Length: 248
Image 1 (cartoon, rainbow, N blue to C red):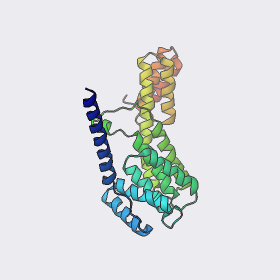
Image 2 (spheres, rainbow, N blue to C red; image 1 turned 45 degrees about the horizontal axis):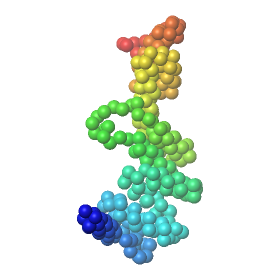
Image 3 (cartoon, rainbow, N blue to C red; image 1 turned 45 degrees about the vertical axis):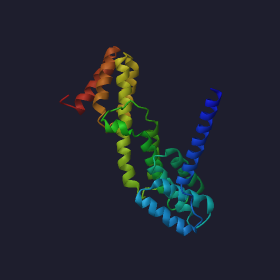
Image 4 (cartoon, rainbow, N blue to C red; image 1 turned 30 degrees about the vertical axis):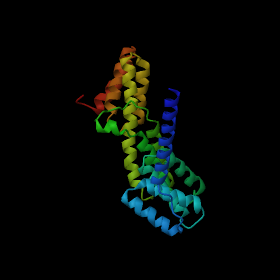
């Protein structure tokens, strides 16, 4: 038995070393080429959608030529390559580094725009969209951050070429945040927490009056205040509801 275990151990180690060797040979090393050659190769990989290899080439350039003529564009391209790989951690780290070191760069608006896109992508749930499942109650921390990123872009660079898309995405994010707060108010209603429900619904009405959550939020306010015996406040919510939705 001892000899058999020894043979199994030897075989396992041999297979592990072989697998390690295969993985190292499968990953091509970045050749020692001039920066213009490496950059051209990286651009071709990006165009072809080979973002993993493009990132490897760009990482090598960023390490070998940190102050070369391609340095800033390499960092921006790396952000894009990481974003396309759904590697949000490295994308955000490189975005923050670029903004911190190059606050006055002519393409800093692109970095800020990519920050919003990256945080928005983290909030996005592929399987939820695939199955058409509405999970408005999931944590909106990344959605809030994306909204703040786009708002900062518009504040600092209102004439940016990315401004129009940022505004459109902020509308989508506002709806997402409004649905979350409405879901919280509905949760409180189900639990009979009338005051908490009324307060959260009031927040929805005040913060997102231009979204589809306005009507159900007013209905919650009317019901919650009524359950609390706050007749005047309930009637006020109902009057606002009738004024804005006469067919309600």
